[in-house]
Length: 367
Image 1 (tube, helix red, strand yellow):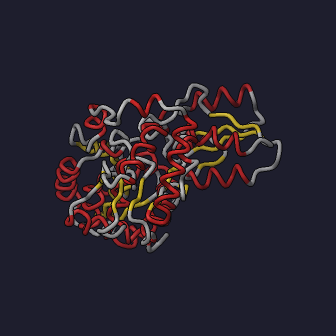
Image 2 (cartoon, one colour; image 1 turned 135 degrees about the vertical axis):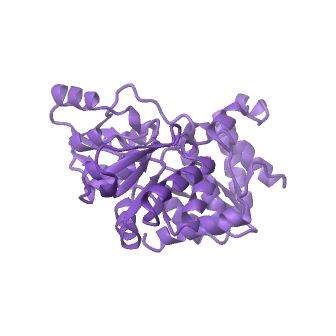
Image 3 (cartoon, rainbow, N blue to C red; image 1 turned 90 degrees about the horizontal axis):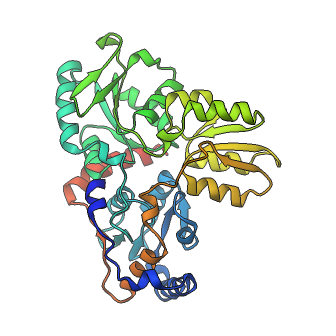
């Protein structure tokens, strides 16, 4: 399901769930969790709202939650508090008897939708004609099951922001060149950190169906898909300059989904897990401007009262699609399970699963 399709959906839960008090919903969620016990497992991504994350059995970034999903063999129901591609991954890594449920089907990902399978197959055909059999595809886990399956089928793997460098290093032991989907910024920042100069990177534009390149074609080592995260791309060099001018003591830490210029001008850059650890381990009274999703920034601020924490972009809003999962939707999803009539079950077809799991397992083997 694409983000556009998700936006066209209306919330399908009864209106009464939006008129309940927060206390009533909290009590209902607790009741279902107690009733189902080990039959229920709730993973929650760091970008989720506090009202949801308070009930998560596991919190983490994409890599951590993928690992936990792969290990989980007890729960009959996995209620995934994240977005659609994450729930797909959970379905593919768990057993057939386990049901993965997404509380709100409108929780998609604009980045994942920037690379569909038809565009990717057309791009692959073009790139193979230009470079021959010298390319290994890698995809960020922020991608559809079909894109993961494409990579698995063609010898490639998935990556997360936590292990992207390790996976690129592995990929270059397999092939001379890398096609990196769908986030150009993570691909560029990771390759650059490994010593690959910008002039040896090209960008594939799936709309124009052409390769954007400044140097010689034969020198290209990394082909970046022209996609991005709509949240992280809103952090700018102007934000950094304004902060440096107004508050020079602030240290700036950003996610590698930010643009190359922003990453280069920041003090530190790393995955969600890296950012959390850096803030937790920082000296008391230190000051930090963080370039990542606003729910996480606010949670870090709340959990680290001994530090001064702000968003790098003062006008930043939380991720729209991550915020689709809220307490009313979670309450309804859990009560439907308790009634024996679960809704929004995420299933990936067997062939897609077979190939996508190859890509996921190549990553998890090196995690």
